[in-house]
Length: 292
Length: 292
Image 1 (tube, each protein chain N blue to C red):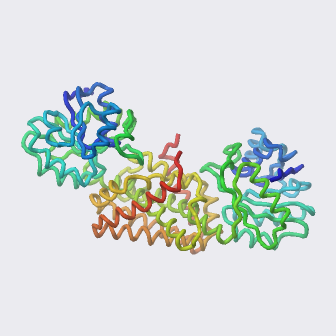
Image 2: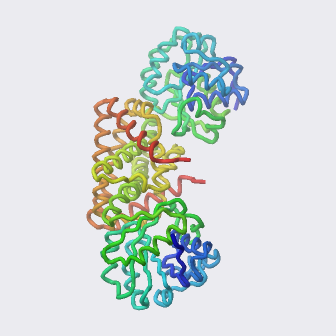
């Protein structure tokens, strides 16, 4: 496996993901210069003071000029808008990639915008925390994580290989997957849990209002862990829900059927069925998830 | 506030809660001797080797004899059975207490079993992990946690005060609450999240089967935290669902309405409504839950 090198890299959206990638690329000597591009000057100043970017600008076309790699790390609903706006400034040989949690819709929106000689490699590093912004970025975020790349018939082999090597260089295991399948997988293990976590917190709030009784102060560690992802960016997650609508609606419906079935078992006092459902879940989780 | 002292204490069910309480009582000099009582000899041997109990027995009536305090820390569906079986061996002045996550039904089952001179103080320390058994017990589990006590018209004042002091001595904040209200509160912040976590893991498993595609290996830290409570004891949680049935069914229905409403907003491409719901949840969680 080779190690890619880019003289000049543009990171559009210097948040948790974009900022952490920039930190790793600099640390590992994968780039000579990182340009941070964004709309928020305060965030860009934080990025500069933390050594995440070497220079920054709020002017997209100015920022991407002369960059061999452009990483678009903005909320998923804005990817295509950003790509469209920067396209005139990109030159032949530029590799464009993204980090969005939704792939099919982004590909559908971005590929028609590409001009001759510009490669687009759709990618999604599966890493993150509930925090966002350049202040939340850190070295090593992608180590031992998976990064899913979803090439299409239009993705050039050499650009694909370069982006694969980039993610491997920062410590990720790269998995190739069809974009539609990616969106189903992520709807299940990431998008659905976020929708549920937000819903649960709102349910407790509604119960508090209806009963005129505080509830949250009687929650313990399990609840804190369970709802941590409900502290994620509402804007980012609303965007994801809109961009992966069908797969998320399917996942919600699958979940509703499962919950309904447990609810019926509880209503019917069917202790064996309740215990059986809980045992199935515990067995699967203990076998697949490492809390260590 | 006084510090209670019991020459001899029986812990029936030396698990995470019973075992941790025994450890704290010994450490703080609140007892001269702890008798561990249970059905599983292996678990009792672990408790003895870890210094959690001073002696142990599988014979309930033998074990509780001569104990001024009997803590029943068995699964909620077994509390009344255990109390009934030990009652002939209890003497005047004994304080009986429990630690169950359900209160109204336990009170309803236990109070008719009490003989003259035996006090019952229903209590629920809000603490725990997804682990169980004597091996999982540790000192300080109850520090800075809440302990809800749900006295009834039959609870003697002096016994109530003693149990209150016991939980305060191990570092808990004691809150008095009506048993029915306790059950509604816990259904919301604890029982519902467990039912949802188990349901979510089973949903992912069903999706894996239907799609013939692995999903769990693409999950990240958020999913791990979110589903941690699905590694809790299936038997214990099935018991809780059966013993707090009405409040849990109400909480599930409130959650279903909330989730349905978000699902409808996603289906209708109503980005403002989705974002509004997520913002409400984030604001509430950030204000009430401390991740530090």
